Image 1 (cartoon, one colour):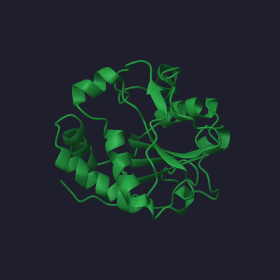
Image 2 (cartoon, helix red, strand yellow):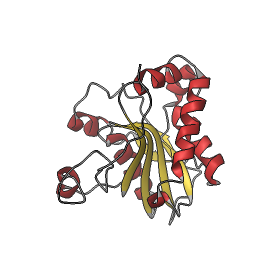
Image 3 (cartoon, rainbow, N blue to C red):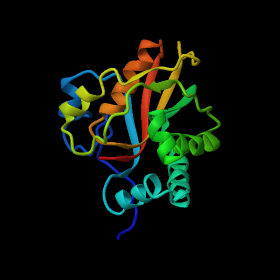
Amino acid sequence: MGRLRRLDGPLCRRCGRSWEGPEACCPRCRSGLSPVDLVRAVFPYRTPLPPLLYAFKYGGRLWVGKALADWMAGAFRLFDELGGADALVPVPLHPARQRQRGFNQARFLAEAVSRASGLPVLDALSRLRNTRAQSRLSRRERAGRLKGVFAPASKADVRGLDLVLIDDVCTSGATLSACATALRSGGASSIRGFALARG
């Protein structure tokens, strides 16, 4: 099955994807603005990680999730560019999906990062629609499908806060962007992303 290996450079300074070039940022990041200031991840999204994540998210193997969460929590302090945040914000699941699964994997990961970093977990987002899995959609389809899916949670005040969004996997970046757009509409000052895996 192979061993888990950390995502290492060279990487785009902004989106955290593998990137070898004379500029610090990849062409995609240079060509457009993003509501997410930067993204960092612990592992590349390749074998053996996908089956481990599947066992955690869909098989209810929480012991696998705990090991993944511990790795993510331990790596957080290695990213100086994620420092100075006020709170961690997990990407929310739709309530129907969370009831079906029994937990939100992003919140599970955020709680581990919180224990290691001392940062509070802030449920600052609501998911308004229950969208299908994004894995087989193109980047453009993902972005279009997520428009208006997230909104600031009514009980969370994010005005002026520096936030770190937490998710299990970042591939196109559409989910983090949609979440960041909602948080910025609520007055968040800066938003960075931290994922277990980068596709």
